[in-house]
Length: 309
Ligand code: CP
Ligand code: NVA
Image (cartoon, rainbow, N blue to C red; front, side, top):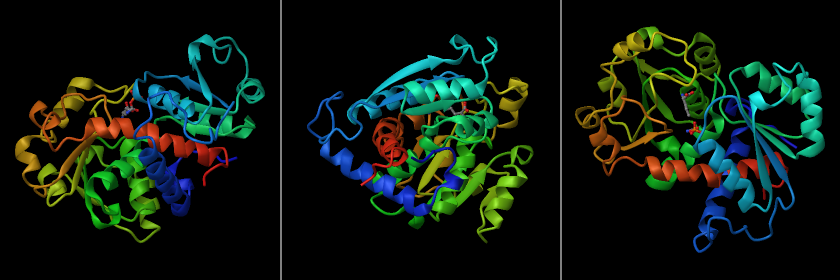
């Protein structure tokens, strides 16, 4: 049994194995319908419990499909319907009950500490479905999408991020070490990534380029990533933050600074950080990106259940 909490804590070899399993599985599903089960039904009879403390569309649906296609099933809980929290039941007791009824636990939470606490008390794998500090299932799936479209290893590409230093970016930074790719970040100085993640990068003798300028960040990029300026439950002065990012929008003009075959990715949901003309352009691969969550999360589940081939 393995947990999937942060890309930083998973070996490059295991992450690669997950991606190559996903590639094989995706190919084999060409002629199958949405709810048809993969040959061999590798997670037959397994129950994945999902709990959301924040809104979700894609993560919820893609995990539902992922476990279904492997022969198992899912139950989705809303945090405020449990005794945990306002009802006074402890996290330890909750974790023990989850381990009694379920086989895996996917948590989207507002507190990183909660993932660690669940990990401590659960006897089943825990998967991070987004926390304040990371969004590892999203980013691993995005690496898959980039390599699928570009047909070459991400280590041979220039990856650019234009936007806030948030959970998705933290996971992308972790991925840049695990998959050894060039990462350039464009965001206002005041929103640069925090020191601890940059020090972690430094400990690998690796450099990430950070610019207070979007054009410099996307120069000769193969891929441009962006995300909402205001994240879920972001307790900031929204108007002010949006204004701080006014020169960091993904526009047609900006994309021209990147390579001509550059693609645009966004985990969604989107805000005003990307121009509609870009979002609905041929270079935008956001729908393919969203669908790939299913394929990659299947292999993440197999990794967690110790069933990765
Ligand atoms: N990208 C993503 O995680 O989407 P949801 O918030 O809808 O799950
Ligand atoms: N950074 C965003 C990602 C949403 C999927 C957020 O945390 O809201």
